[in-house]
Image (cartoon, rainbow, N blue to C red):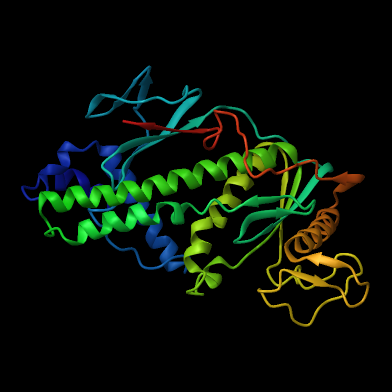
Length: 349
């Protein structure tokens, strides 16, 4: 397909392709090829055209330079940019994107030449997390992190802006302005969620070498219409992804426990398994050993035991007095530089 690009550039119907850098066009074709390969291998659905009203992006494989408060893009030239941190290392791929609010970003992939540390073979600091809705996470030490409820905090503001949008004539200038305000409200919610997740995952990865969590079926759980909005608002999958790469960068381990493991119904003291334990029961007493359990803390303790068992099964060791030294408070603190992957930088342009 790439061999037809020179011909298409000289055709009167597609001569606008001359305005675009050749490697940008080639990168788009590579992405299209990857999409079809994933479809044929049944890893994804059939590729479809992107809406021009949503997020737009293109890639530069090379030729980009960054200096102080500007970035050089081939065939465009120097563009002013807000460089939020120094771009150190060799510049690889640069992705320019435009979101629904009309803001442009440059996501820069850098090769810093630093190898990731070897995986830790002996753990002294471990923790297990149970994910919930009332509380975002509960650890095996009994510490609970409150659910920030990002969508609920923005719901009143979002509803007002969506009502205003519905009154505008589609395609008019006022419609475009109102739609951008709705997009900004969604963006504020997303930014708040990402900030919270980065800070919390940074704290957990710094204080623990092994983190055990349940491998939840998010898509299945979100089919519950009463809880779908609350579950999707938490962004569990994104949080786990952030925690995963932060642990990898520090040589840590993320242990995922099978979703069918009965962590809530099993007594963490004697191992007795309850036949049923409805979601509305938050505290229960074990009929075998008479231990009173907090449902979430008990689940986290069972996840901890199962996680250490899996960790040892892989040939690693854990200190006899090992355990979590992490005390997760309702508010978390993070270094100012921890906003994403250490080898990625995203600049507003």
